[in-house]
Length: 329
Ligand code: 13P
Image (cartoon, rainbow, N blue to C red):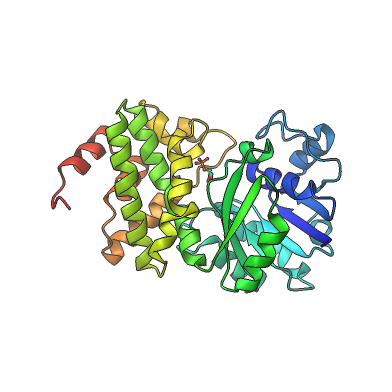
């Protein structure tokens, strides 16, 4: 079915999804960049040289820095803007909602001051309930290179999830549906925090035993935290939970794991965070640890990550506290 897409956000993931959608000749796709210089670079080079070097963008993909142009006549909006900028970046788009086009959220984080999930920020800024969340193990560079990838799309409305599934699926990009939007979205945010812990573990030079324990206990923590906020436990054993946790904790090019790795090697947070890519888990750890301590949810690993990132706790001391904490269950 011919579909017009507006992809908002030209980071690695926004660029890769826009390119994927544009490969379907029935689709017309516009990619919006918040920064005129980035839009100009993408148009000139037909390549996201900063974040997806070596990958040519389809000729049919249109690139703009003009919000009105990006969403004009779009049947589907795709939001790929990092959580910290999402509310502010979407605000100018509210007046262009002439039809209630579905919005597919790709963002995996939590708003630091409000604990809002990305879909809640979209609902508040664009005044729509027509929202789906696409999540799962999906490094942008692999999707952009056509490597097999499986994800899950979640929406409160099963018809919307199925509609999105059929628009996004390709023979290299498999999309499952799920009714647990809260769980899918929380799993995507929380795995980033465990991904930082996995990087710390690697940076400190620990082995497979430590990493396996970290992933297993991290998943327990993610599930406990999610269920306390209305998620289904089964979601955390699926692609959005276990699947994305594996990708994030093992990938050498994962942004969150790399933050933890460099901290584990003794670099300062300021040095580690200088660079174009956003590691969502850094801010998510703050929201989660505050919420966990306020609500009495046991989350020692995610709280330990927060302590290392934001309170200057030495990584080795955080590990020591985890290994010796009581009770041992
Ligand atoms: P990382 O870059 O931290 O691995 O996160 C990417 C992601 O969410 C892949 O699904």
